[in-house]
Image 1 (spheres, rainbow, N blue to C red):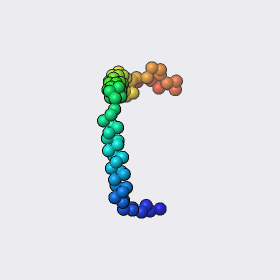
Image 2: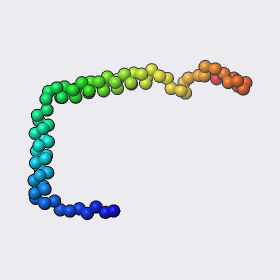
Image 3: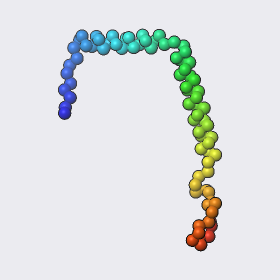
Image 4: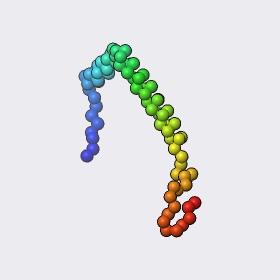
Length: 78
């Protein structure tokens, strides 16, 4: 089903512009607590990423590991 692109009237353009201005005014009126919350989240994400990378480097790759138990079919352990 095709969507028909209709021309936007000057009235609708003005309404859309007013919404953009309203959103900008609301964004400028954000309290400092909200902005501090973003910095707390950023620090937490950075700490989590750092811890994950440390944990990942501590885990050895499966190719380097030798089996702990020999197979029961008689094959020797590597």
